[in-house]
Length: 188
Image 1: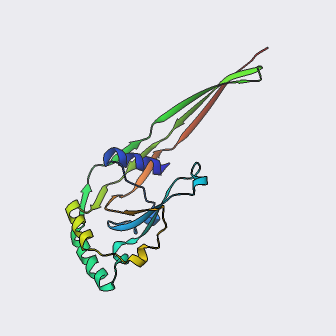
Image 2: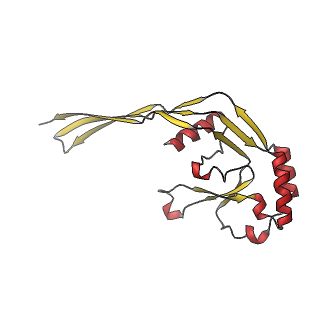
Image 3: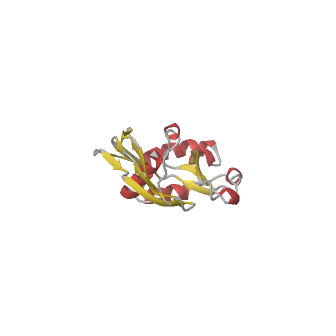
């Protein structure tokens, strides 16, 4: 549920194309890190969604170690950081569903489901990113090792992370609540 709220916040404030990362992967998620969008087999697609797997920094896929060391230093000089001072609240809202049901002509009723999604409060936001001209310059100077890159399977998408937005903390202020009410009537 928190993933949904964070994704909604990112789409409303920064646009599409953002993915959420859990706290265990935050150290790995940096600008110019490669990731794979792995699609499930065709027979599992109605039930499973695609999965993002964070691999490693672009420097791990360069041809020589000397290039990788120089690349890291060069990359650090190109990464820009910004901090947003405002605290953000994400209100998911609530939704109500009503179902009318009749069972074998003897019992009929209405089922109402109320679902309050809660409020997610974010801490201070910070952003690390690389400008487009800098990114084009970096990619033009970078020669990746074809042997390592060939190991990725066909059908999967190779992604390059160019921008990361961090939140100092996030907290659910109001828990998700469910309410079910059933009205029934007997028929003769």
